[in-house]
Amino acid sequence: EPVPKGERAAMVIDYLRAWSVESPGRGARVYQTAGGFRYMILSPRLAPDSEETAALMARLEADRLYAVLCRAQKCFRARLTPKPWRIGMQGGHIGWENFHASSARVDAWLREYAQRSAGYAVCRLIDEVGDAAVRDEDTSRVVRLHDEATLREGLPLA
Image (cartoon, rainbow, N blue to C red; front, side):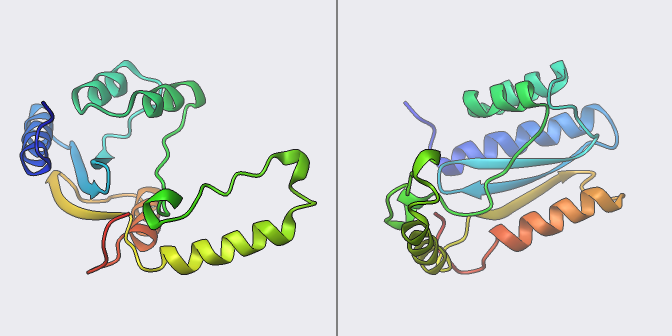
């Protein structure tokens, strides 16, 4: 039986607090998304393909496909816009062979998507754990860009 979101949030925040205490300097931001949670590990910098990252992802029950992609592509990713079906739209899939021929259709879909997605937030910051101070410009820029794109106070999550 799935753990209710409120209890799950408390569990992962408790785990991340304990993780941050194990080694000084560890810190993270915890976000709620429409489908679960998002974690931004601020320190230490973790390699996407490291065993430490794999263990942390497993413990936090990260999406398996996400973990595989991070490891294989040696990068982390975060969706900055709502998934189309969460805002009442179809996926808008057009094969590359038809992309140029369908540009008017693509443009119309993108306009509708932008209009609908403006009424939603992608995630909410629910906590910061450990040493969550951002000390370098690259990390600061990532946090700022992520939060500007995804956090929209008072809007429903999608």
